[in-house]
Amino acid sequence: MTARFADGDSANNRGGSQHVKSGNAANDDPMFRGDFQGLIDKLDYIKGLGFSAIWITPVVLNRSDYDFHGYHGWDFYRVDPRLESPGASYQELINAAHGKGIKIFQDVVYNHSSRWGAKGLFTPTVYGVRDEQWKWMYSKQEPGRSYDPMVEHAGNDPELTPAQNALAKGRPYNGDVWSTAVPAGNQCLRWGTPNGRSPEGYTLYDCQWPSPTNKLFPADLYHQCWIGNWEGEDSRSCWLHEDLADFNTENPRVQQYLIDVYNKYIDMGVDGFRVDTAVHIPRVTWNRRFLPAIQAHAVAKHGAKGKDFYVFGEVAAFVNDKWNRGSVNHSAQFFTWKERKEYSPDDVRAAIEQYDYEQLLGTGNQPTSDNAFLRGNSYHTPDHSKFSGMNVIDMRMHMNFGDASNAFHNGKDSDDSYNDATYNVVYVDSHDYGPNKSNTRYTGGTDAWAENMSLMWTFRGIPTLYYGSEIEFQKGARIDCGPTCPLATTGRAYYGGHLEGSVTATDFGVVGSASGPVATTLSKPLVKHVQRLNQIRRAVPALQKGQYSTEGVTGNMAFKRRYTAGGVDSFALVTVSSGATFTGVPNGRYTDVVTGDVKTVSNGTLTASVSGAGNLRAYVLDLPGNPAPGKVGATGPYLR
Image 1 (cartoon, rainbow, N blue to C red):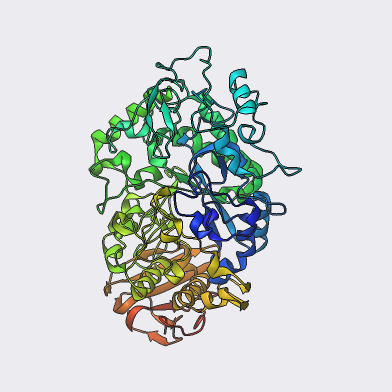
Image 2: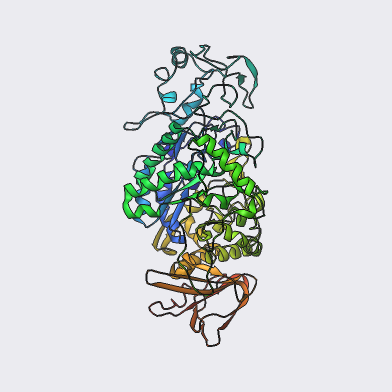
């Protein structure tokens, strides 16, 4: 979460109208605190941990009053100036990260906009524009920067009515100063009728706040209903929340608006998109419109490199089972597949047809794949011909990550239903939830964290860490309580205090020098653990990209992995936290990357002994032209 990670420029800090009421003011902790300058300053910390990519929260300008997390976009073409500063624009962050070999994955939203509407598509005229509420965004204008006209050019905004401009220009805000002009063509009934009080103490009025049913939004551009069933068709075509105005993503004008918006960020050089609320857009719309557009533009802009543009979606299936309450249309793996029949050329009709067709077929008639699995001990070229272009967050493993063993045994049996589970993004907790939809940051203990990490870094998928977990930051704290309590008491507390000082990375997972509080942070046991895990993963291609199998393997969390392509042939036998026996494996010389122990197999059987939560063994086979790397990294608190 960029706004909570590291504060490189205090001049762009902003607390919002909830600054005092939330308790943040008492902690001198504005919600917009971290910024791109802070990220640039601490890229060596991230690289020193061993990470080669950063997934950052959305960057577009939002007007929501408490949106430091960035999901309420209003001007999608502009980067939020509370994140930028001179010399640290978004483009400069991208360039700086690339200069260190680090990728940037941008969190993007196709499903909705926020307060109010989306600039350049449609912004409704509401009853009363509270310009004074937005003066907190900037204290003064700075040369060379663009500003929100609703804030800085009050009284001269061509998008507002003359009455609204007059109001903004000539009268101070006292909590109940409103425009009374009824806009031409207004469809909202009871214009300006008082309708209660807000939690902040403002008088509320009809037609002041857009909703799907009050006719402030046109039906061709925005949906006109609330979600009633989160596993129903309406979850793909109705509003999630009163401040998340749901795009009609089946409308060609909306589609082109979103395609053009996000092409801009592809042009800037971001390396991929994490797609927010992907489940709330029909798969057929993704497959027809948005995913092909992303792929085509990435290749057109960046050539062959553009083929690697990585897209992974949030399909929030908060269940421990393989399918989301029996609904394939709401299950994560469903979104990794192309459509398997033709639907109406009309996107609205096609969305309904696709939903009905797949629901009728049900969970027992979905496509399957062995792209994640070895065939015996052999790697095979994966068949991605039916891949949609969208990978996904592994929600099932996330939900089951109360402990590593549970995640392993209750996660991998879904792998035949993804197009290719080796591309799943795997994490224990996030900025939203802990395992099993816990609303607190993970509190399983240091040993459990080490074990979780050891599994994620060696098993299939892409290991991902919510920053701070490397020191168990805010463990047990409520992840989010909005403006009703200070951020400092939550899982979204400011992290930068642990990063003060200087740090220089000499390689991924290798710190050359560090001083100040960040040196103390880097000395923590889980930091040492994740550094070595990243070193090991980088040294063994099978652990990065390999297919896996548990055939012939005994042990609680044990598996074999192989990757063979482009002159690389890497084969590894892995067991986490406890010993295992591998039978039917190739004969030859194996070396453990953790201890350097060498075993020569002549009868197809290797037995690995290991104990201690988070400890592991990964025996790598010497192959022609692909020797085992030997011991990788230094013995640490868990890998020993």
